[in-house]
Image (cartoon, rainbow, N blue to C red; front, top):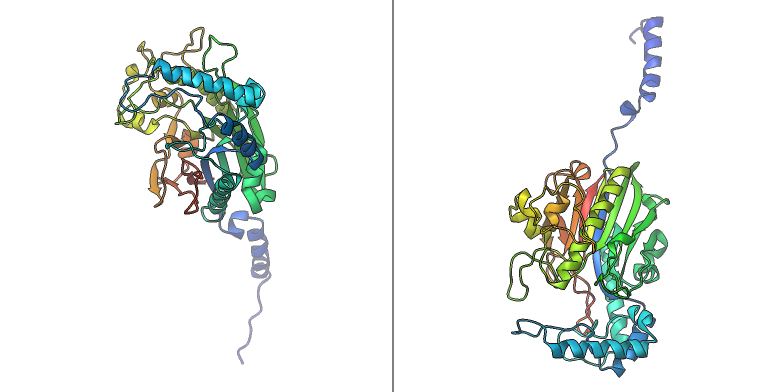
Length: 413
């Protein structure tokens, strides 16, 4: 048996001290924690209300034969006819009378909201229940399969509707909405595991009126912000649903190419949302450089980004697009391109490219976007992309689950 040599006091002291030294050093105790990865999604729910909302709407709309309150330009027509305008005005008057007044009618989905493009058909409560079931199943899939923990919703009636659609996940998620005097509003749902102190705030400046000359004109949707702390860092999510009808700069067989200084009424409204949107972004950036701007932009900012627009082309007056543009008495600005106005050099933004679309995904394309602040984008993988998930739909469903597919991305924090 070998003889053990006596250990010197100095060596013994060194060995005993070694574990203590390592324990005091967190970096040596364990490998550095992997960055948190959080799924984020935007989903336009296509006039989602409660079952009771639909039943009230359907009772009114049966009486007026599901008429359209918005005058439409028929295929082959260069403009909307005076007859179409009069038909729509009569529809508005009849709907408001049966709903109990203008304010009550504004909180009801329009009569053609769930009718599709064909001739009106008699819809039932079970038809609408199928739509709600499809929305709930789609949201469940986003949470369970896509790992989404922050959801930005558009075209939803209230936070209560969102809680219903969260189904078995409702207790796990915090929910807020943006109070609004119209049926369509914005809402957030976030996993409480990210932090109990989620704070929501509404930007009413985004809710410009359709017609500034009419004090009773309806307002478009406000903006809704959600502030969280993720991995100890404050981050803001900004949910938008901008004015529709002024979407693209590349003409299609259906839609004309329009800049934001186009005389079309929809473009005039979207134009007046530019300055409030820029002020909102500036205010959020002062609190935290990390933010996500997402939602239904109703504008092909991907087309604008690809168009190679020079700075002097962004505004009609040729002025530098940096900073909030000057407004006239009605709130209009000289801006012609939304993306270049927002990503103006003074403010750095990055669009998350769409890199995957699931088979079966139908509906609008190019309107829903996810945009990161430059500071947040700098910490993401170079190949970061977003994806669209098909909505769940029963084979014989008569009301579409949604005409938008949810768009999601997984961000690193």
